[in-house]
Image 1 (cartoon, rainbow, N blue to C red):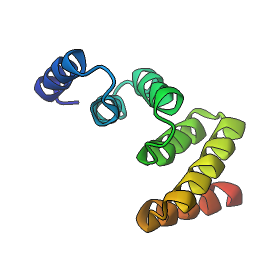
Image 2: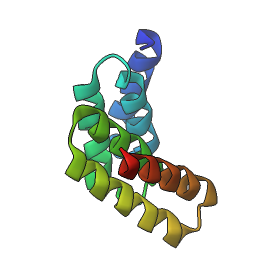
Image 3: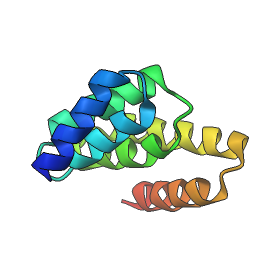
Image 4: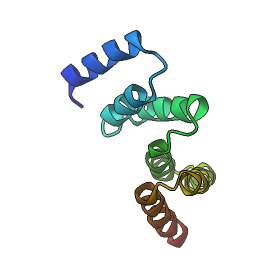
Length: 105
């Protein structure tokens, strides 16, 4: 986690508290060192910005890593559905590949 970058992102969040990219970037900063904080930001994104589809891949993987298998499955499936509707081929492929791997575990 880069503390300077995190401080700057938090400043951006204060200025634009509803900006999904800033919330996503903060979650990604926390992902490796404070999974609970990352989880909170990802869940905030899903709740307030359900069409920000990049969130689904990382949130589903985090749920999987934390042992929340039902939440992981639902999040993968929801992300796949949303990526299909928006025709975002890259996110759809990444989600499908991760989901297939998850289902094989």
